[in-house]
Image (cartoon, rainbow, N blue to C red; front, side, top):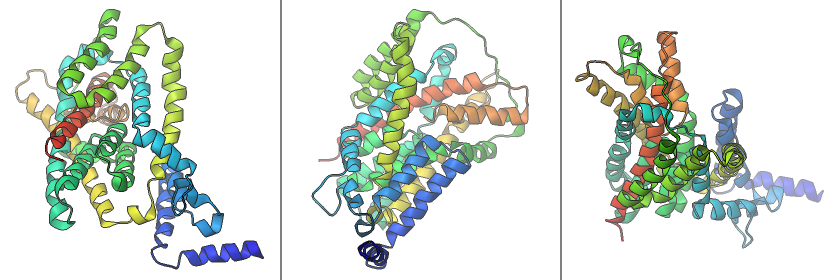
Length: 397
């Protein structure tokens, strides 16, 4: 009878105050899990995020101490709060993720197509355009002014790079605790939905003829010394020119150095597999645990999600339009679709570009050029994040 009484009280829980919002969070969490299982949209991210959103919004009266998982309503600290403090607040998870990504990246295609680095820069246009738009909307319609508006605008703009770790890094740097749920979910959701979001934008901005453009690619051996020096030089240059990007660039390049050194194969494989899988798992459920109903179901969440999507669209369009602009002056044309791969979603965006190219012409192979653009975008988004932090820090107290 006592168990039934507790269950009954739990049911009544949803009828009081804003507790009904928890039911909406269950639906949102269920939707993310559905997308992960049914359509396999980055299941390693969406599934733990969705489950974390459900877990953190369970009522105290129904399941005992589950509310304590996030340290809410009692002084006790639960495991999700510990994960958030240890992995997000300290920026540990983004750093570890970048070490794993660095170990996965082969910069060889970029060495053979160094001009692709410009697409990694052009595809960051959406970050700064959205930053300015958000900076206008926040005080005008949401009553958010001053330093808070600057910091939140910076974090929302970074979502457009489709770079989850950098987005979390920027949001945490500016201590945007109450906004981290929608910011993190937007960044990782849009990164997961690259195969849905990018194709319509690419097709809208390119003609069938442009999508059929072929690009030559020649296999050439890159000296090992170049592969080893590259991560070291990039770290030094980025650290000197954009100091705020040094932690993320350094961790990315450290992972790549482990890969290219040739003497740490076991560590390289561990970084690419065990480390990447474990951190992704913990990061996903921790991000989900930031989706507290009282904070997440709010008009500002709609703004963050909407502007994050707009930033992503702007970034994709910026890369494509930049390629089309270059074609005005180039004798040997570039397939403008590779500009869309200049975002940070590696290697998903490059695969999307190749898939579209294959649909137009089954014999057209531009994957290596798209990969070159994609790895450039990985670097570009980190540098852009560092620049945004540096610029905003100049104006906040």
